[in-house]
Image (cartoon, rainbow, N blue to C red):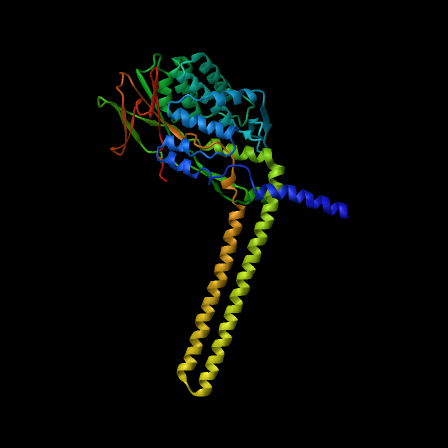
Length: 435
């Protein structure tokens, strides 16, 4: 019996302690860097990136992307990391008959489909800036293969936003035929993208093509929901986009206006990320979250009961004291004293009810904070939420001015590091954030 008790205790400690103290970065750790990126201060976003988890997939990806937005092809660390995980691609079928591939990283993170593809696109982008088109082509082909791979008839991963960005990378390499393929697939995935179909049918590329990446990446939000498994239901998360999807307009230095088209957003990346993450971590996370729920509900129950008890004592005491004062006033023939007793009873009761409610409410809020896992959810941040694309039959003159509702919002130029131009493609970034 003692041995069994020891085993249960040991398992509880091993399961529960990781919930109490995590070595992983949280949303709070990223708050300064995220705020800078939302305000288009990329250098400050880089400077304030949290220092934890150095050398891991997530942090390397985030740093590489921010550097590339500034035109800095600092991809060596990501290239070395990619070699480590070349043979770690895995395949898994979910309970929802969707099919996923992922990469198991050395530090135990399961990189999802869009993150694996994005890694190769970042490497292609960096090699383009280094003018190493052979390596850029290899990485772009890997990304294309992962997007086009038929893992099965149902649930395979392909995405119009990734296809549009990949088409931009092919264009920067001077490989218009490959770009046409990706524009064509994007239009097939989303028939509303008539402009993608138009680009795919151009036998000759336009004189200038512009792609502006938008958004600072979504934020996870706790969204508990009904579920057969209560642990997974309370562990529910949705992702709220920060970008406003504004109607962006561009004009070049000569005043030529460039019609910009908005792409689909990246929301499906994160829905799949959460489903896939649950599939991989079911048993471990269910056990950990079960311990967390037990503690949170205990805290909430005790706090609520305490609030009710405290409130009841105050009400009872107030009524007793008020009654005594009323009796004293009546005995002494003083109406003022009796009225004062009634006032004490009423005001004390009101105060008691309010105090009880406040204690119970604070306890429930504390329990909710304990159950909210959105701040600790692990994923690669800062990825674009959507993109704008436009083109011209005549060569455009830099710099560009971006405006929304006829209000200028930023300048895009190579000198300021807000625009990169290789071959005919100009690639820029605008956060377009509301908060």
